[in-house]
Amino acid sequence: MNKQNAPQKIYTCPMHFLVRHSLFILLYLFFLIFIFLTFKDYGISWDESFYLNSGKVYFENFFNPQEVSKLIPQYHLVTHGAFFDVLYYLILKIFNQTSSFEFLHLVKALFASITLIFIYASINILTRNRYVSLVGTLLFIFSPRWLGDIFDNHMDITATLLTSIIILLSLKIFSDKKSEIWGLPLYGLVSAIAFSHRVILIIFPALFIYLYIFKKFKKEELNSNYIGFILSFLVFIAALFLTDPYIRINGLLGIVEKAIYFTFFNKDITILFEGKFYPATNLPWYYFVKQILITSPLIIIFLTISGALFMIKKFINLGFIKTTSHIYLLMSLYIIFVLVYIFKPVTFDSWRHFLFLIVPMVLIAALGLNFIFQSRRIYLKLIFILLVVNSILVIKDVYGLYPYHYMYFNELIGGIKGAYKNYETEYWGKSYKEAILWLKENEIKETKLYKLATCSNPTQSAYYFADNMIHTKNLGEADYFICITKNNEHNKVGGEIVHTVIREGVPLNFIKKMD
Image (cartoon, rainbow, N blue to C red; front, side):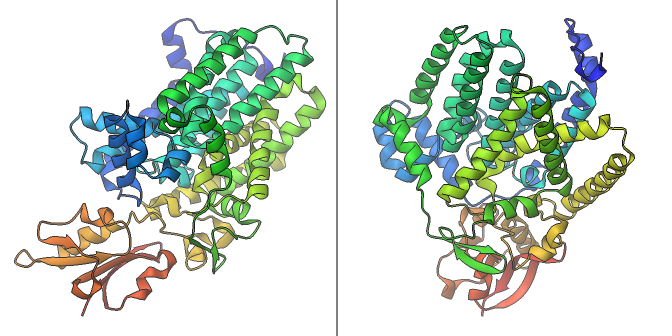
């Protein structure tokens, strides 16, 4: 029997389990150490203060959703869930840290790290190879767009976590009939939180249900577990009412309204793409695909394509029943790409709103990697060596951009230097922290009151002010103007440039001394 296809041993002793997965456990511990050593280095993103406040509003008005609707904007209620807002705020409140963005960053990163467990477990189900699972997890860790956002990105990183949970549950239920008993009710709970958090995530459970029923039909087991599905649906509805204020206000009709609003959401902003500014509602048809291609490490792109081809070949040879998990991963990617092409939802700040797609991409890439490991063809081994070299280059870029990994661009356009003035780079505004710290160290004197103007959310800079520094919206009275490069806002105000925050030779933030 082929070793890779042999049934896995069941380790009933916890020590056996720990030994078998000791390399991953060690990797996870190293990642936790990285979090605790670096969480104070990251600045505040432009929407963090809003989510912190919304968590407070949701928590204090949990039993009064009508009051929530008065304090939170309508578009936010419809398109964003409340679960993680409340969760993060509650943790900060327990530790009496509700005004500490550093502590908030630590909490967010620790939750984000849990994604690694689900990624590793999913790859292990797909490949039955813990070494491939380990390498696949490393691929995920060194996805700069994910790594650079784990400390502060509220919506997209948690959407990625939820996606990893849903996919693991799907793979587990597809591969182990016994897991349906506990898996389906849990599936309903996680799906409700995911739908509330970001509506498009419902694609994953919807596709799972379709493939699950189709598989049961093919195996003539259609009536085998209808109770589990009913229970899952009831849990889904109950969890929605419990965690989503908009659903509690509008009832079941709110579910439809959330889906419709998400589909036709509009935002009047411009996007820098290929050196030109486009309205967010009129981007080139290939914007979404190209953003993924130029901001993902080439190793992930190559392995994802390889894995997809391998999965298609396996489906042709073995049929639907034995490749349901593969079809699930491929179709989830395909459906979302098609929906984006058809509905053209407003996307800005690169493809971060769809960052959760990195989960199926890495899982498919892991299958491509597993195929290369199993192959005896020499050219595939040479390709693997090239992929290792590319991985080293990615790590080098991550180090060079630190702590702004989210601005990573790959070799297809020449890295961040090739992206400058052609694509959005510093869209989060997290470089304000570094700019303010430099200003305090080099320009600010204790004997004078300084007024500072910025071109972004004042909290991003004011949080780091000294006692003799205040924020002003009046440029005429400002002593300094601090601005990121997004939309060329820094060029709209004159003044002497006294300092520039730079990474890899590319300016991110300018400090100007006003006349």
